Image (cartoon, rainbow, N blue to C red):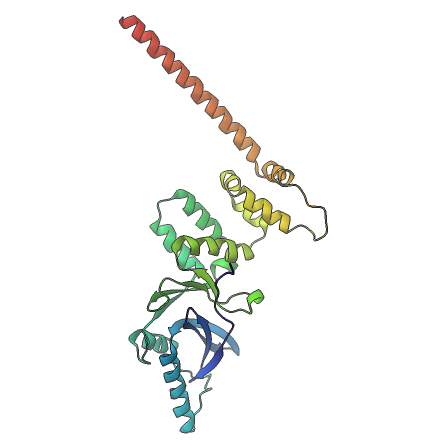
Length: 270
């Protein structure tokens, strides 16, 4: 089954100095709001539109042009905050919507504050060490159509830089942020260096698969067990496993001693 994603850009609406790039997704229109800053188009937020909203926006543009007023006043555009709050209030008709526009850093720091899982906290903190990733922006629909849907705001060259759909369920979103956004901003070596030995072991097959894909095209494929052996030697995984084995043996010996002591005590009581 093909991965669900927004359509390619349908149209661009110049609205009083704001640039609105429109993409279709699940029969609605994900509308990315951009502004020219130092002659560079910069994403400033997003909203969810339907046919009614798009028609009303276009009517506003038409009236402005009919009055011989400029719509491309990029130096003094319609305020972004006012435009987005107007969407929340339903000023252009249709269904009101609100989309959070935040960095991955903000998103993950909130997850860290709300989770009790030490493993998740360790993973999120590791991801936050990659500044290029952490300072990137994402979109999360919190009100209106497409509620809970999350997108990477800028997308990637491979998909024409359209917003990249991350999912609409928390665990799916987190998994896609890790695998499809974070891992694009770090090398395998960087990510391995930030992992604990236990994390390396938990993600063993994902790491091996990534390493095999990274091999030079046409070169002989390095077997999985050989790759993993190199990772474990490099990361101290073998030593870690040996120490765990010793601890297990010590626990078993302690249990045996306790059992034998209990048996002797029972015999003495008889």
